[in-house]
Image (cartoon, rainbow, N blue to C red):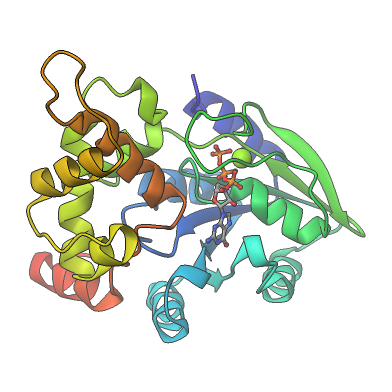
Length: 271
Ligand SMILES: Nc1nc2c(ncn2[C@@H]2O[C@H](COP(=O)(O)OP(=O)(O)OP(=O)(O)O)[C@@H](O)[C@H]2O)c(=O)[nH]1
Ligand SMILES: [Mg+2]
């Protein structure tokens, strides 16, 4: 099992003073968890939303997401943990939220949002293990405590169960691509999403100028020589797994703009 149970998450949050909810800058809304936020609030802990992987989106977009969360009463910072960018801002936000010292900070969020990478960035060296693909060696399996500075400790946690965020994020973050019985459906959804938000994403990643997700998977399979032994048809399942991996690795590039969320919210009149 590659995900944390809610029970173990409650255990971790109880021990923390501050909780970081790490979201993916490419789609902060689908990778946030209201349930987690409500839990943190109900336990009287301080919440900071950390918009990570901001190197994959334009800076002004990262600023807009930060403002959007702040306008709704949340503390928010954006960082690029892998490049150790924004760590100073995060440290300041943590110190500000800390009412007493020493402070314990729990790092929570969906799988593969970069929780362990944040700990490494704050520690300044690689201590917590990380990995690009769900379930591949390096994913976090249990809560662990790290010292990240004077009077400051962080607890790394495995990704929480993605009950929200829609079917796509739940599937691609919840399981290693090899374990997906049907990788084609989520890969098709992913390609549709990529093309919607960045029409050039597929061409940039694969050099394929095509809009039909099934055709794209066929072409990727054919180019890489992935065919069924029986009849030589393209092995689109393998191409689908590759596409999902490329999203995790940031090769298939797109992001959801904050404006889209604002429109959706005003349509449903809730925030
Ligand atoms: N582009 C980019 N990639 C990042 C960033 N932070 C982390 N990553 C990458 O995202 C992948 C997942 O990072 P981890 O730190 O292992 O994520 P995690 O949330 O701890 O993952 P689990 O423990 O499996 O839930 C790794 O390949 C990281 O290198 C970032 O700021 N930018
Ligand atoms: Mg981890």
